[in-house]
Image (tube, rainbow, N blue to C red; front, side, top):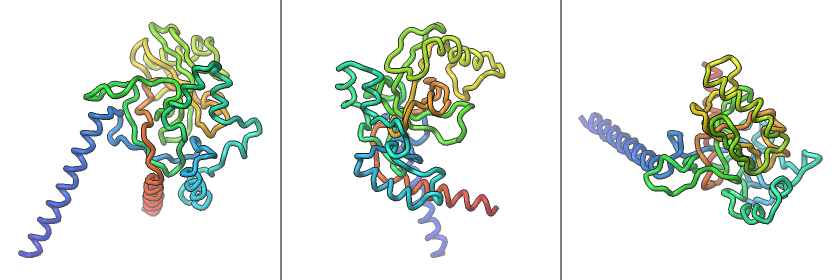
Length: 274
């Protein structure tokens, strides 16, 4: 009888914990509006690492020790591996000239960057989906979390900064903000917009797993602060459509993401021996 009562007590405690977690997640979803079950993203690379970030330097040291046990790729500072390295702020100023951008950079979310092993609390990607209008739509300087296109290897979502926006309406470019880096308006008109059309038609030339369902949408040019160039010009990635974006980075929680990296490795080892 005593054992039975103890089991009931454990079951009750576990149920209460699960219900509490569910309520917290529902509330966060309603308040933050991210298009994902849990509004938290663990960082698994150093592509947004800043060399002058004291918090990131600790994770940088951990990355050197734990690669390749916990990490799939080594961690390094861009200035130490790229010949033509330019600090991320200077890179943006060079490609988006004017006094306006200099002021805006200081207001960018997560302007101190973040590192592998951090956890990022995320928000709505388009300013919608919240019970209160806390957040605006995605703009230059925002950090977005997006799913990869079919050309890009890997399964993990990518979390990089928006440095260019191309707005499309009725299949025509209405506005370009920021930089296109090595791409041109003609590239979007003759290549990238037709890719989206192909996806909507269901043809074999669809290169997006997630794609807009209408003729009005946005493309994003993205860059990791610690990378030499944009994803679209140095990593052969397609411009990101707004349909690929699941959230935006909002608040950095240092080091908590290392737990996920550890659990992922333990899980993979377990699967290997099954």
